[in-house]
Each structure stands twice: as C-alpha cells, then as structure tokens.
Length: 178
Image 1 (cartoon, rainbow, N blue to C red):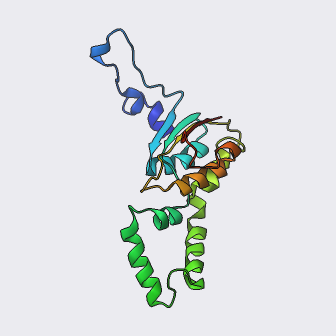
Image 2: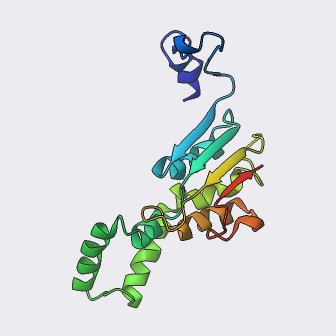
Image 3: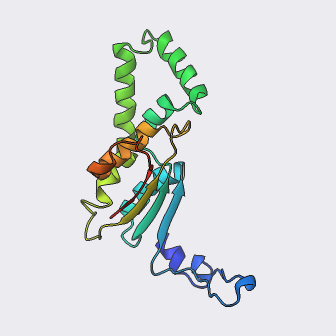
C-alpha cells in the first residue's frame, strides 16, 4: 500500500485529482500522509490495516464491527448463511443452543481471532504496534444496522478501550477517537 502510494510514476501518487471545475483549488493526494476510509467490511478490515501500517495516521471507519462469527450470527442480512450452518450442525447432533453448537462457535471465533478487529482495536490508540504513533480514528454506525449489528460495533469500540463509547446504542452513534 505505502509503496503504491509513493510511486509517483504509475502508483496512486501519480493520479491527478485536480478538478478543472474548481481551478482555484489545487487538489492533490498526499502520499506522505495516507489515511484510511472504509465502510462496512472496509471498516472492519480498516481496523487491522490502520493498526498495522505505521504510515497511516488516521482512519474513518463507517459501520465497522468485530467478530465475523457474531456478525454472521446476528446479521439479518446474512441470515441465509446461518440457516445452512444450523441445519448442518443440527444433523451432527448439535442444534442451536446446544453445547456442541456453542463449542463450534467458540472454535470459529478462535480460528478467526488473528484477523479479528477486536485483536487490533487496542493498537489504534492505547497500544500502538512497534514504534507507531497513536492513530486518530472516527467511528460511525447506524442504529439497528441489519448488516453489521450494533452489538459487533460495540465489541470493536470496547477493544479500542474507549470507556465512554461502550454503548453502541448511544444517541450520537459517532465518535472521534484519539
């Protein structure tokens, strides 16, 4: 990402973004100070990218979440994925709510944990990776989101360790974190 940004001959750094309709304003991409903007899955992945790439100093994460297992379980948008899972596990003697079913979900969380935004949230502000600096992060979410449920956004906010933002149902549903 950073290599492509810094490539001023063929990479993103070479893109002319100046709009002829706004001749008085010079618009340029700043490869020296990249920032991240992501929505939904882009917000989920953006937590990992922003925490891991020291050159990224700030991010906007719109409707992000954490724990893909819980996103799939709680999302009405992904309900069509849950039904076959429930049917399959039920055929193995593990109906929803059973110990075997819950053990399977715990195993799924464990497998996905290395790529879970919850594992990287704390590295945005309170514990930057390596010699990286704290990041500035804007998080916004939608009340009763059917794709990335508010509960999973709350998981992400708690992992960032922002005590004031632990309620994903708060009225403003947006926060600038630094």
